[in-house]
Structure formats: C-alpha cells, structure tokens
Amino acid sequence: MTRYLDPKADVVFKKIFGEHPHLLKSFLNAVLPLPEDGQIVELVYLSNEQTPKIPALKRTIADVRCTDQQGRVFIVEMQIEWTDSFKQRLLLESGQALVKQLKDGEHYKLLKPVYGLGLIAAKFDPTNCWYHHYQLVNLDRSPREVIEHLQLVFIELPKFPVHSPQEKKLRLLWLRFMREINRSTTIAPEEFNAVPEIKEALHLAEEAAYTDGELESYERYLDAVRTEKTLLIGRYEEGLAKGIEQGITQGITQGIEQGVKTGEQQARESVALKMLASGLPLAVISECTRLPLAEIQKLQVES
Image (tube, rainbow, N blue to C red):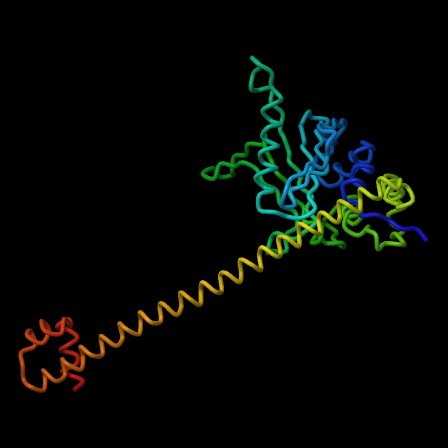
C-alpha cells in the first residue's frame, strides 16, 4: 500500500519544490494570475535554510525568487498555520527583494515588480473568498491608478472551490494536491496522474522516497507544529479565563457603584417628595436635595 507525506511539511515541500525547479515553475504558473506572455522562466533559491527556528508558527518553508518572461520578480513562501504577523512579514521580505534589485547608482526605472505569495494551510478570512490579492492603488483616481511594483497574494488552501468553471484546471489540481495529500492518503485521485508535473510531485511525496533521517525530520517538524499550536491554544484559554475573571470582578464593582448611585437618587427623591408635601418652594427643594429643578417639577406632577 502506497503511503504519502504532507507536501506542506518542510522536508516534503523542499524535496518536491526545492529540488525540482520545473515543478515549482508549473505550480506558480498555474496558481498566480499571470498573462500568457508572462510565464515564469527562471527560479533562484534565495536561502539554503528553509525552516528557520522562529517561534509562534512563523515557519518559512520556501524562499524563492522567480523571474518571468517580462522580467518580473516573485518571492514565494509557504506557511503551515496562519498568524496575524504573516502579512507584515511577507510584506517586509517582498519589500526587501524590491530594494535589493538595484546596485549603487542604478536608476529606479530598472526596478522590476515583486510578488509575495503566501500559501496558507488554514482559514483566516471570515468570508468565502480564498484568493486574496493586495496591491498599491490610488483611491482618488477613477479608474484607480495602480502601482504594480509590490503585490501580495494569499491563498487559503482549505477554502478554494474544487469545482469551479472560472478557474484553470491546472490551478485546481495543484491546489488540490497541496490540500488533499497527507499521511492518511493511500490512493491518490486519478486526475493527479494525468498531469506529468503533478504525477512526479505525487511520486516525490511517497513515504518510500524518504530516508530514515528525512522521516525523522518530518516527524520532528509536525511535532513542533502540534506543540506550538497546543501552546497557542493554552495561552488563548488562559487569556480567556483571565478575561472572564476580570469581567466578573468589573461587573460586580460596577454593579455596586450603580446600586449606590441608585440608592442615593431614590433617597433624594424621597426627601424632595416630603418637602413638596410641606409646601416648600421648588428652588429651596432643589438646593437642599441637589436635584435638578426639572426633576423636582416632574416629581410634583407625578405626586
């Protein structure tokens, strides 16, 4: 029986896309909204260390610069779990790629656009939208003027529609491969074998293709992810408990304060009613009880 490993794990993603640039080209050309004359033709791997030890699930699995037929530049990252800081981190790294293009003295017109691609294995947006494209626009122009030199694309793998006539078939197959293949998979969908690049990636994801050391690294990575998720859940529950405790304490305090204020108001109104019954002037009653004249007039009418 064939068993597969999750391609979103670092060691598997690296074997498939980090050691076979033609597979990454196929993947990016399918996933990114590229024009027919803007397909990716060259890849440069920027870092040998693809899994830096960054806390709170901020794991970079791939860091790749791609150049297409038009000379545009792309930065590619894979993220196992969504964190709020991922947008900012991808923005920072993509911005650095934009800046590093120019050497001292070179003209700004030589800058090529940079795309940051975040492949997210978790849901982070409350809407049904799964493809998020960010770019710089002039909000005061109609139609809006776009600065294309820095753009971010985030894809929520769990949410993309499997059956969508609007989407390219190759895009859906690659995204399905990323979402559906994991260690519980024993039989891969037949349509995966119909595309040579995905068929090759599928073969590279087979557990039998990995050494004992790579499998140990795979397990360590998944254990680290599970541990960090458990820690985050623990912190959330601890924070929730403290929040409830503080809310109860605050509620009791506010209730006491409100009760005292209500009691004082009722006492002043009671005294004002007795003074009204005695026929004292309204101005005198207001001064003695510190109630507004309008409230005393209202009490006089109601009594």
